[in-house]
Length: 120
Ligand SMILES: Nc1nc2c(c(=O)[nH]1)N=C([C@H](O)[C@@H](O)CO)CN2
Image (cartoon, rainbow, N blue to C red; front, top):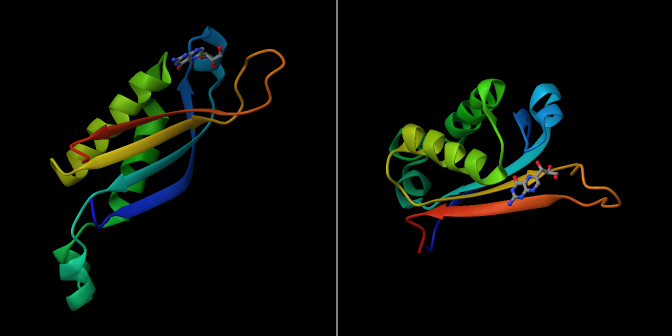
């Protein structure tokens, strides 16, 4: 993949987690996603209508986060890929979803899963 749009640091409050209280109360997630697309047309013309508007993907994931309910980061990442595909069609996609505060005793870090569709 030679060219891509990368969106990083998209913080979303979502109700995802194996524990019932994670799904009931919700928690912060941080997303990064990439669109593997040719940027040449917009680069030459300065006309966004000839390319991919990253704002549409951000808005779609903000909307999705309001209603999503599931257990695992893996399943959440699948729904994120589905939402991006609904936005942009069958283009190469990559996503990384991090749980910012993981409810594991004695663990102060974050956990992330990364997934790809049609990438490479
Ligand atoms: N592979 C995964 N393992 C775990 C997940 C997950 O989403 N994918 N989630 C949890 C809990 O929700 C976590 O927040 C704390 O135990 C556990 N393992």
